[in-house]
Image (cartoon, rainbow, N blue to C red; front, side, top):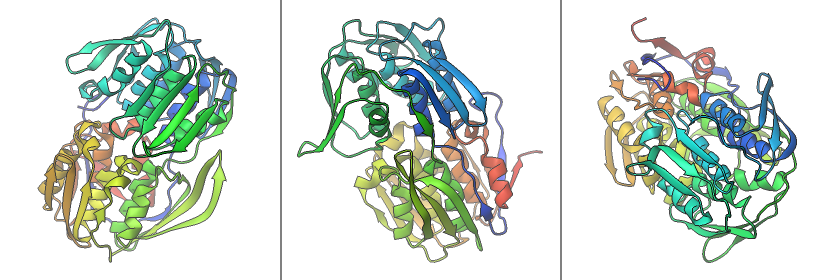
Amino acid sequence: MSAHGDPIPMIARRTGPLNGIADVPGDKSISHRALILGALSVGETRITGLLEGQDVLDTGRAMRAFGAEVLHLGPGEWLVNGVGVGGFAEPGDVIDCGNSGTGVRLIMGAMATSPVTATFTGDASLRKRPMGRVTDPLALFGAAAYGRTGGRLPMTVVGAADPVPVRYAVPVPSAQVKSAVLLAGLNAPGETVVIEREPTRDHTERMLAGFGATLGIEDTEEGRVIALTGQPELRPQTIAVPRDPSSAAFPVCAALIVEGSDVLVPGIGLNPTRAGLFDTLREMGADLSYENPREEGGEPVADLRARFSPAMRGIEVPPERAPSMIDEYPILAVVAAFAEGPTTMRGVRELRVKESDRIAAMADGLTACGARVETGEDWMVVHGMGPGGLPGGATCATHLDHRIAMSFLCAGLAARNPVTVDDAGPIATSFPVFEPLMEKLGAAFARAGA
């Protein structure tokens, strides 16, 4: 069943070349953070290019519930009138975060050091995901969390009335956990320190500094040490959200595997903590180039051109690259199926606890489509079948996971036989214009049974 209604089965058929300009939506990670930090500022934050997918809209509704004014001015244009650090009001109802693990975890962090209580829930997929990785460090500040067995939603978080700063080493690379702790540290007196052994996406640190927080970052033998001075008065900002590299991954990867394709994706954010997929694709031999590199809103940006790449070969993806491309492994697995030889992905345990068990979901779907896939607890090997070599012809289960759905639809554009996904509905949570954007480039999608 779809995240917000009845299932929407969809079929993708082998197509002619994909050509044109793919205007992908704004970056989801930055969109979430822009709304939350705008709500924690004093005054008006103006945002352009905001991703208007369901995940981000749910975060905007949550900020309203905590007392901020959140106004939609036009397509991608939003205004947030914030309440300041420590100014959250107690919500009058349950906070529904839909499908968004990022949204719920960051919001929990933002409210955990204010003396308010909030109850969080989400869709069937989100209610299966563990929250202990966030609520455990939030407890160190003095917050308390009461949820279902295994630390799952629905969950009530009681914010700390007298928060204390913490020093926390993130046990598993996770930008969500790091960000939740830093957001909690905003309303704790003194200095909150987060240590991450492997760098993860750093949008929170960049944006905190932009909003006026005092932040120190140092690479040490312990790892990357981030020290935040608590109880600042955050200054409202004007934010232009760059386009989402995780969304760009789908038209880019589809172009690489569909014969004759040439696709340009303008204005993509190329933050080094997010660009691991593109580095990996180039190492595989992809015809992928950056044009017009520039900086916008403190983030590196470029136009990305992808062309059909029949000479791609499988590689061993460095495990230390995983944090910079953790959301892109599903579509990488599809590309790997059209390369020559095996592609090995290690250090990807985090995929087991995303919107679905993405290792299992990709392995099951690719196997059903005729590929050979091997998996372990934190690794996956896809044995490539060369250009146009994937038989296809299967129906793949998406498990309410938008990235699984989009990945298999892209696979169907290059496979020998059509590929069907059991539910394309969850795509709206992160990439609401995926279907028309891909069809404009030349993709052949259809609602199954229509």
